Image (cartoon, rainbow, N blue to C red; front, top):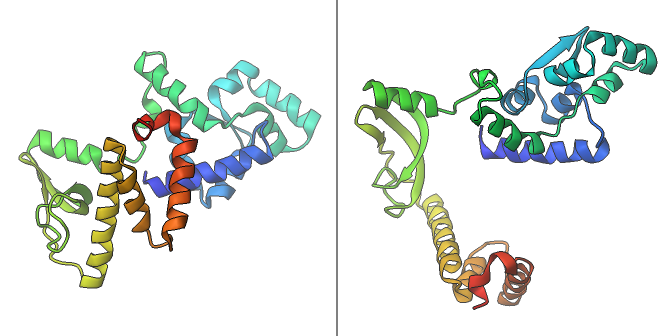
Length: 243
């Protein structure tokens, strides 16, 4: 599950929760994310088993605790709106449920069955092929650049196809990028390295240089204001900049 999907899910979930903090339905979640497939990616990974009753979907353990189908029938008669019935019984607080859910699995108090059909994003295939000494061609993996992209810095993390076998993970060499693209990417590598160096050493000058390399920063005064505001706001977590 890629980070862009997670970010978009968290954004849409936040909007739904703000609009209806008491709960919302599966259909709301599907509508927010754009497809049933994407909604299931998250619900299957982070939530307990789901149960269906007369076209409505509920968290299985919540439904059982509430009284099962008899409670659903009662709420349908009382509320009239199926979506409201789902919202009444379900709580889709995925951000809060995830740590507890994983802890329950780790402690043996919850099964891992719900994880079996989730997308491994290639991790499972890589482990299987390394352990079994078979060969697998994977379209994209992040590795230090050892020349697979010829005109990017050695050691920079790059994403390219790889071959996975009993000897490990070997990058596929892709040649060189067109020079204008390579120059933009080299700049991003420099920005990332300056950011890390500044954070490790508490170096305000390198942090300022990092900001100045960002294309949306147009002058040094703006960069200084952003840096000062950031370091002040997060002073508790960045003490190295204040020593």
